[in-house]
Length: 629
Image: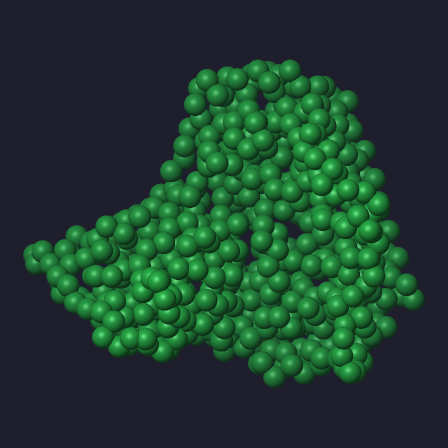
């Protein structure tokens, strides 16, 4: 057998990608790299583009319209596969590359794996400066791709072919490591892409990547067990790490065995059925009042697979000053935050071992009964919001979410990001039964780690790709506002062109309504958020969203202003049928009331000028810092 094979750098990279395999949570073996999103241009069309053409059947390339959009779709693909599969995205030098930096930030904040392959300038500098090159007067080695460094888990610039031998194992490690998972960026100078080298054939042997399950340290486990057994009002908080570990079943079993109420973060949403007796709801600023009340009274919090960001902790005002927090996380960086009782380990294995360590300990039954009371009260509140609607009978976000919730089944998937919709979805969604054969069981992608406007418009393309393999009968539904649609809508055409159907519900409320709410609720004047308070010669100009979406190849249901919830329901059901029949996205356009929201009443730290609040914001922040555990 020949020990080496002569390939270009680009050919070697894509051949290596094809050889990588991954194991899903259910044990199924699949390609680690499911495909590539690509926009070709100066810097990648000949080197990487030619290599991708040669393997187009084994590693499909999907054409995008905007580099940020296709990279965000790749991020959504990773979440939809519970981080078990990865999409790559490639761009030209310069503006194409910089367009993907935002997507790298989304992936980094949410701990999601994606491989970004931006073109780069010539290493040999024979042509200098080249088209799209940004020149740094004091350092000729810098290109725009260096902008990726702060938002990359792993960054490398390949300046000669043989560097792939050392860097590609690190690429695979980061993309599949439960603690380090995140965006990998390989900057590819266009001359190096086409340079040849004799690569060892063993580099292209099939390799199966199984996600390691780190067991907890015995002493850390014993210490945490002692703290937990002292609790009178314990609370179990489930984050995204529980989803990616496939530990929903073990988390529920822990709660049931020890009588511990359980709540979910935005990243851990839909892991526990809503009707479970110990389920307390969605935690945090955009969560539910019931879950926040439980958190506020808990004396011990067991936080599993969460990085405890400010929207989860209500800027660290959501817990008692004397609360004791036990964290379970694969990343020690997250586990040790805020001087917690830290356990570094896999969520599934740690929950099993911690349950054994606390033995027959059971929390007081009155505390579990409190969970039912809190959830019942919140459910009644949401029911009223779904029934009453907005002023003059206008549709509200709560009604839109409730309608989609009622129609959706265990194979369906819902997603959103940014603006007001995350609060409606996180706080108001009621998780039903888990689909047979489900892996993590999660049926929601709520991107609130980075709160990236536009993600929710393009993410359903990636999610629909992924879910079509595992839940072919299910429907992906995206919920978003007019602001997000106007920001990043071009990939609706990509999804229509490529034949990946989903339903998008576009709620037109006339501007950036949730930021208007933040602005005016703090005493400021409404300014530059709603179309009615933005500067312009004619603020009555409105976008025709239905015509625009139709022009991008989508089927459209335009619900007229003044229509009721039954009209919206009929339109949504027609859209689901149309998406399945046409294999294209179906867009439902409706008008929603701009100031009617589902609110949990939690605190969120924001910078408020003294002229508006009458207090010194620095002193207020210091006061909250003193309350941190």
